[in-house]
Image (cartoon, rainbow over all chains, first blue to last red; front, top):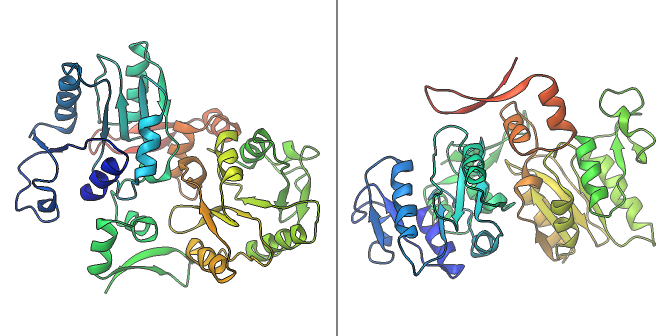
Length: 188
Length: 188
């Protein structure tokens, strides 16, 4: 999934970096990114580690915006990331299902993240408290993160990258339960 | 939810009609639409009833496209519906979660729907078999249908219409489970 997100960011013309809790060399799936993308290793909590990146952006006069995308967005495409980077707002927020924040663009100083609880609502409030304008992006692809087995149906139906390929190679498929007509994921 | 969808369609400059299994007068929630929007009553299955609408469009020389939106899309906005109506393609498909089809635009003769099973995949195949070009719209708002209690979180967080108002009036709210950090819907 991280490879799909990195490819989408690069396809949108931006410079991806990977924030990781540890070195990625030798880690299945991630190893392919070693040497391909700069890796920032930070073993703190997600919130603290992302804030570290946001703070480093504030200190970098050569950059005027930073975008933070979760790595479990395997439906991300260059087009969807392009819409994110082009969206208006001092802070741009993309919701995940259940109140999460799948992506954020920060163009002002002082914004800090908090991924606990209903993070989207907290991020909106934080931005408003700063007097920052808040934009959003209406994207199924960016709002679809993978938390539960049922989410793999979305990857199989709409993915076209490394994650979808991995699922197919591993024998995953979409099946319809004839009784209820519900769609579920199966593995042979 | 149907009122929100009707308002979004109208806000996008199109002419909404409501396809219903029966008269809406006196039906809680829907009664407000009586006299406000033309109602087509058809008590057949969803697939047969929608095909009836698509067929009547083919016979109407004054119209060159018909859009069919499910009525349980309470996050729909005029902007999102506008993107749907502007999307390129002889057939435009908007997925729902789990392989459903939340919206379809038909600009060719001969296309028929089938909402059983993985309808999005079937609709793609039907369009290709016709030699029709297939477009899509990447929209969290249009891809969010309401099937399960957890989906109400999305309405409370992102809705701004009649469905969200109803939920708030009825005492629904979003809560965070402190133990797991998961977001859920509560009712007081």
